Length: 284
Figure 1 (cartoon, rainbow, N blue to C red):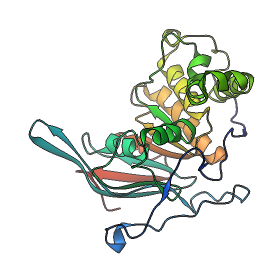
Figure 2: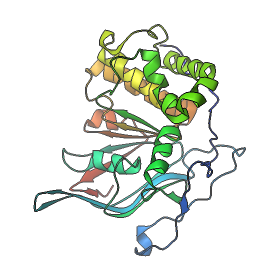
Figure 3: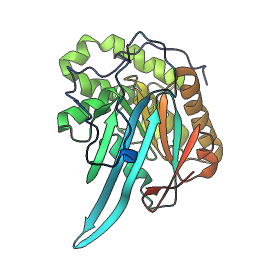
C-alpha cells in the first residue's frame, strides 16, 4: 500500500460555508439542565494552526430516539450525550441493539432524533431541511459502512467519483472533471488501489471493496469520517489492513473519525472508546 500523503482539500477546512448550508447557531440553554449541554464552539480561522482534540467538532446533546412497530414503541437511545473533538479517533461499542448504528445515523443526519440536538462545528444540524443535510453529507461528512454500497455497473474510479458527480451536477462536474479525476486517483493510490481503477466491484475482494468505499468517503475531503462496522464483513487480516488505513488517516491527516464496532479489539485501536448500554453512554 502506498504511503499516505498530505492533500489539498477542495473545500475550506476552517468551518462551514454558510452560503452552502444555512445553519443555526445553537442557543444555550435549550431546555436541558446545565450538566446536559456543552457550550457552542466558535468556528476557527481557516489559517489558524490545527490542534487536534482541543475543539468540539460534532456532538449529540441528550438525544433520544425510538422506533414504532404498530402500537409498540421501542426505545433505542435514551438521552445520549456525546462530544467529539477535532482530530479524535473515537470508537462506539456495545452489544447488539444498544443503539450504536442509530447514534451514528443521527450524527450524520441520516435520521433525526425524537428530542435533543445534534451539532456540527457549533451549529445545530438535526433540524436542517433535506437539501442542507444532503450538502453536509456530500461535502463535510465521509461515511463508510459494513456493506460497501458500491454501484456494480461503475468502475472503481467511477464509484469514487460518485459524490463529486452528485454534488456538482452534470455541468459543474464537467467543468472540474480533470480536477476531480485526479483527486479520485489520489485517494485510490492512498488506500493502495491505484492499480484497480478500471475494475468493477465484482472483480474486487472484500477488502478492496472496503478500500474503495473509504476512498469514496475521502474524495470530498470531509471534516469527519463516520464508519459503521467497517471491518465487520472482513476476515481478521483484511480488517487489520482497513484499521491501519484509518489510524494513519487520523494520525497523519488529523482526520476526525467516529467508528461503530462490536469488536473490543478493533475498538481499542481508537484514541477513546465510548460504550453504549441500553441506549445510554456507560460511565467510564
